[in-house]
Length: 310
Image (cartoon, rainbow, N blue to C red; front, side, top):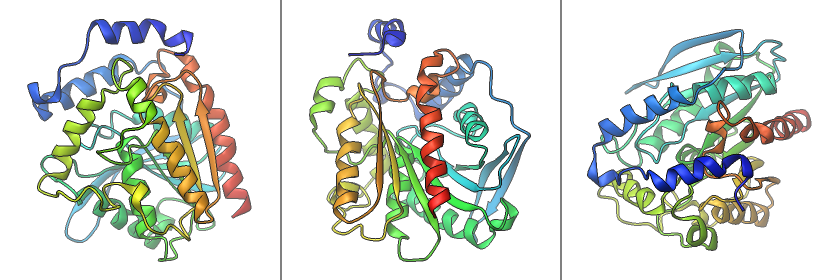
């Protein structure tokens, strides 16, 4: 059952459905997402410093945004990848969320403007994440105290990218103490019970997501590749400990739960947090629906736990 605080929003979404991605352009969709984000931004959490930076990855440069919270405890740097179905989203669309979690955790954040489809199809975003992880570790003191720990985090499509990049680099000694995966999408052909039950009318439309997967994958057709469907990784031994956040009324809920089980199978420590009654993307709604941020304090506590035991 949807949380009562979301009843009005869910009703409005059903009465005014978003156009199918095939009936518009990715440029227009990005403009709409930015406008929507601004409209629901609300009062943002204060942080001490926000600086836009450029990450030189050798053959390309990525934009990033560095957040320093008030009361910075110098315990961790969180490298963050935004959601948006691999096609939309940028530093602005997740700015309020990064500020809020940075302020709540007292951890520094580095949000990444990774390359998006369709201009940069698979595996561009994953390559960006892998190279960003390596770059940050090599230049760590530019972003955080030398004794701080490294956490990697993403939501939705960004969580998928983080999932894969964390798995691919697990033997490189990058020192990640946790991967935080917030309502991740974990493959284009997954037909779970939650996808059937919540696949339409609950903010994330599954047919829209599958269309975006087509844009993301481009000419790459092997959906059994674990970089496309992380639930098919044959071995995840040595992957970073995970905190996985799922929403009770999200079509992707069961994928996140299944990935938690897969990690545990390979001996990876996992904490699974379920936000009951919430829909996909609920954390971005905190500016207008405060109840959507109830899980943040719990998430912060778990993040601190992994930092303390590392």
